[in-house]
Length: 216
Image (cartoon, rainbow, N blue to C red; front, top):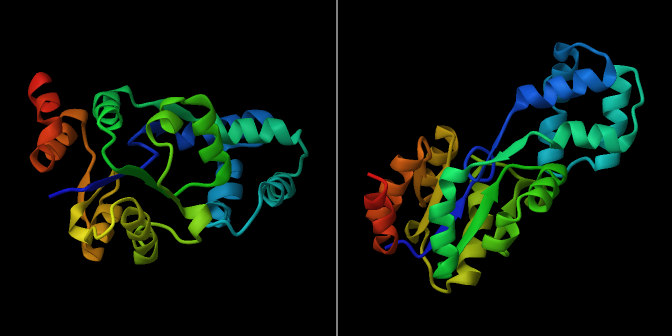
C-alpha cells in the first residue's frame, strides 16, 4: 500500500531543455554554445550548484571568468533559469492528489535558481506541493545516492508516522534514479509517458484509477 508519493521536478512535473540554456548563454555572452556548455557542465560547476557547494554569486563569478565577459547578473540568471515548461499531462494526477490531500512531495536534483524560478512561474508547484521538498542543494547530496533517499524517508515519516520505505512511491524520468530508489527500499517507477504513469500509479493507488480509465 502506497502512503506517500514523491515526484521528481525536471522532466516530470516540468520539462526543461539544456540546449536552450546553452543557447541562451551563448547569445548573452557572444561565445559558442560549446564554450558555454563546457563552462557549466564540463567544469563540474553544475553538480556543485546542485549539491549546494556554491552560491549564486559564486556561480556568476565562475560563469564570467570562464567565458571572459561580464553580463549583468540578472541576465545570466534569466538565461540559466528560463528553460522550463509545464508538463500539462501531469496535471490531472497532481490535481487529484492535492484535492484529496494525499501525502506527497518533491524529490529533485536541483539548484536554488531553478527551484525558485519554477516556484515563481509555475503556480501549481507551490499550490499542489506546499511542503515536503527534498532538494539536493539543501540536503547536500544527489540522486541516485542513498543519502538523498534517506532524507526523503525522514520527510515522509514526519508526514506519515510509522511509514515504511516500501510504502513510499517515487516517480523519476531517469532509470538510474529509479534503480537507486528501489535499492534503498522505495517503490519507484520511471516516467515515460502520461498514460503509462497514470496506469502505474492507479495499480498502486485505487483512488486515482479513474484517471487512467478516463484517458484510455
